[in-house]
Image 1 (cartoon, rainbow, N blue to C red):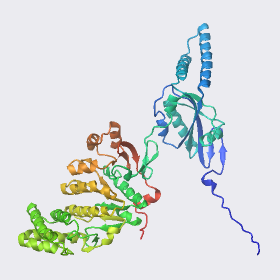
Image 2 (image 1 turned 120 degrees about the vertical axis):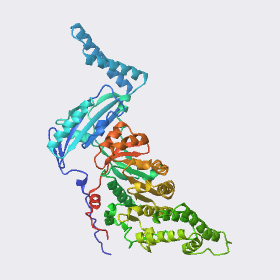
Image 3 (image 1 turned 60 degrees about the horizontal axis):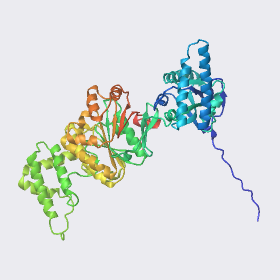
Image 4 (image 1 turned 45 degrees about the vertical axis):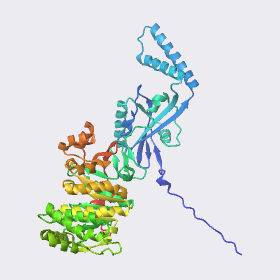
Amino acid sequence: MGLGVVTRRWQVPNFDLLFPDALRVHAGEIEVGGQWLRVFKAVGYPRRVESGWLMPLLQFPWPLAMALYTAPIPTGTGLQDLGRRLIWQRGSEVANRHLGRLANPHQETAIEDAERLRRELARGDTKLLEVSLYLGVWAKTREELEQVTELLEGVTQGMLLVLRRMRFQQLQGLQCLLPTGKPVAGREMDSQAWATLFPFATQSLAHPAGQTWGTNPANQSLVVVDRFRMPSPHSVTIGWSGAGKSYFAKLDALRSRYRGWDVAVVDPEGEYRVLKSCGAAVLTIGEGGTSFPYDPFCVQQEGEWEWHVDFLSRLCRRLAPGWGVAHDSAWLRAAWKVLGESAERDTTYAVPQGDRLPAVLTALSQRHRETAELVQLARVKWRRLAGEAVDPGLNQSGFVVWNLQRVPPGDKGAVYLALAEWISRQTRLGRRRLVIFDEAWHLLNEPETSRYLEELFRRARKWNTALSLVTQDFGDFVRHAAAEVCLRNAPLVLLLRQHPESLNQLAQALHLHAGELQYLAYAAVGEGLLIAGDDHLRIKVWAAPEEAKVLAGQREDAS
């Protein structure tokens, strides 16, 4: 048997992704892979601090690295050090008094603090720790680094935090910013003051399995939301015209598709056609040549036919002019006569299959001919809007956009009602789904459709469906009791820039304080306030470069 040589090719990882190719160390800064870094060490702290006093550093608008080192000091060692300092400080005080000098207020304060700390250590009320705090600011150019340094020093001076540039020690400072760094000796701090440093107090929202909604302008942290982690997955977005509410809704639809959710969008203005490039099926209602996933005028004997009969009564009220209470009564009596009597027959008889509407219309013509004619009129009008074709395959489509731009204003209520019925049927499939209603005031301002939407809000959560309402005016939710129920069942409320006249109404309903109202009154496009349960935090909506191309219509269709 011959011997062969087995060779293995080792692939060296690209360390440039983790480590820079070179460091250029200067006296007061370091050039790291095309970026400039300057490291500071905290050498003085305020005498009295409160929880969250480091918040200005966490809200710093430029990239800032912070490293905090802590080590315990034995109580005996701490008492000995404090005793030596007290002896030296008291001796210095006595010497100044004998020389006729004025008392040094800084020295008197230091003696007072040292005696208080010594008593607390002796009683065991506190502990001593050695603390070192390092800060590093990053910039793209040296000139920009100087501007960032001035800003940081101004912020820390307002906090009474004294920083020292680590001149000729920048390399050592960079090592201290890394997890493996070894700090230089710091200063002693009691455990009560140390507790105000860590953990940091900050406003953030980051659910473990959520999706990115934007960033928090206060501290530049990501706002990551998991709808189904909340008590209810529904959301409401309210913003003035041009505030960016539809832009956010499109991003929400895209990012939900990333996660494999089904997405359906009800688009009354044709703004969501750009999603066709991402595989969305854009169906335009009102042209007559399109198809619908089901026939609203097909009455089946099996299933919840009572619910469908009531739905048809509501639909005819919107499609047939002159439909009133008397027509409702005649329609329901005829439907119950045909369908109810069939259901009450002996179970040995087969349940009639197929469309039972002709039988209902025949019975209706004998009792109330005008109602039968109005039903026929509504049926013809619906087919002109949505077409005669029925495509059941749309029920399996994972991404559907219903474009209602060509629907006459008087018929949009009927189309909204038919789509709400379709969504109600789809929720029973059990797949995780997001349904977006843009310009939701079309539904909220009508008592009938708002009640239908209320039923969806109550039931959809049980079937893994999240509903998102997008509208301009907060008043849409207070005109009808059903609309108020929708708002109460939405733990996620995104408030973008608001009209000044609606601010007082917002403050009373959502318990906003004056600072939040002022922020909403002058917020920029895409900026606002997110209410997630009991949490209130600022948010800035942003899109990745590829997402921005999609929303701008600069990407070719997926087909």
